[in-house]
Image (cartoon, rainbow, N blue to C red; front, side, top):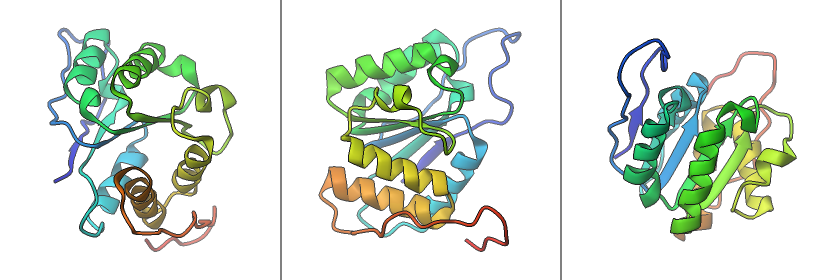
Length: 183
């Protein structure tokens, strides 16, 4: 089963209280601030073949408070074998969260993919990944090209690489920047 924690609007710094995401752990966790990532991943999850590990996704907009990040790391991230973080805006966008991620994977040995949220390479972000650079680049290409098929193949790639799958997904497929997309 795959569960998505996404609430419209994100965190409001003027609101009182702390936001806690109630998710169960899963072998693969995606963190992103882009609603399009969450929506595309949701559509891709519905079309996956049997044998793919469970996936969780959380919006960075819901992971802004330090206590929220710490709790999510303890309850969800500490149990993941693969964590994918897509950051638009570089390391400065989510510095505390990035530090918590790095500490978590140092303790658990999970594979960490830290990817730019756009199509511009960011060596600083990529350097924080613990996965091999070839795997980081391939996953980034799948997600940068976008489209449901590339997201499906990204998940198949992770299943093959980290969970002994035998899906052999094709390389990332170029999606035209202009035109009608039928996914």
